[in-house]
Image (cartoon, rainbow, N blue to C red):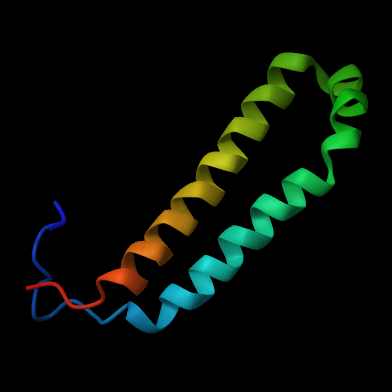
Length: 79
């Protein structure tokens, strides 16, 4: 059981985009992990607070895209 609202009949079917969303989310997370060694330099150049906020926002977007894609793959048809 999910706590998503039922799909409106006029709403487009977004299930075909789910696999692309999962792929994009995984690529975004892997790109963040690959650039971990550059973060101290960015923090020295631009400020620690700005870099922490940017990384948190980036990972939040990546996580949400991944979460949406997995949710659509597991439950493409809503009542």
